Length: 227
Image 1 (cartoon, rainbow, N blue to C red):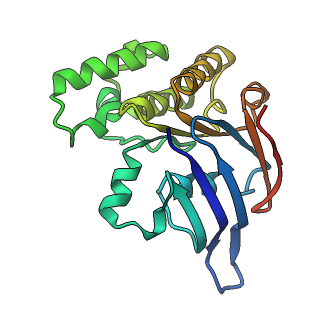
Image 2: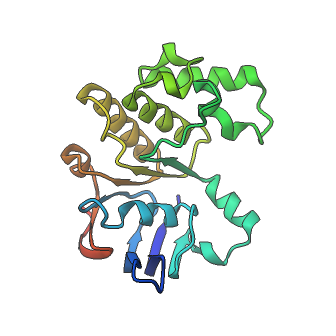
C-alpha cells in the first residue's frame, strides 16, 4: 500500500507575469496508505493540479509531492516513470488516443510489458463489460459519448492493477446508473487495499471518503480526520 503526501506544495503558471496563476499555494496534506480520500472545492481551486502532482504527471514550482516516501520531483525520469506505472489515472479530459480503437486505448500500457494483442483484447473485454461497454471494443473514441469515454478512461486506469488510483471528477459525465457502477468499482479498489484519491462534486462519492480535503483558491481549507 502506498501513502501520498504534499509538503508546502506550490504550483504557479505563467510565474512572474501579470497573468500569474497560483494553482496551488502552500498545500500540505497526508493521505495514509490504503485510504479513500476525497478532494472537494469549486472549479479552479487546484484539485486537478494536485492530482497531477501526486500522480507524477507534473512537477511543482516548489514544495514536495511524496509518493511512497519518495520526493517525485527529485527522482530521475526513469524512476518517475516507474512510479507512474504504479498509479491509475482517471482524467476528466479522458486523454484517449483518437487513432486507436477502444480496446487498444484501454490496454496501451500493457504494450511495453510484452502482452500480445489477443491477451490485451481479452483484458479489455473483461474491464469494459464491467462498465457496460462490452459492445464498444472496436469503436474509436470519436464514436463514443462523453460518458462512454469517461468509462473507457476508467477501464484504462485499472488495466495495470495500480497500487494508487487517482480520479478527477470520475462521475461528472455519467448518468446515475453508470455513476453507481463506477462508484462501486472505486470501492472495490479500496477494499483491495489500494490508495484511492477522488476529486468530486458527487455527494455519494463524498460520503464514501475516509478523509476529506477541501481546496479553495489553491489553499487547503480544512481536513476531516478519518472516520
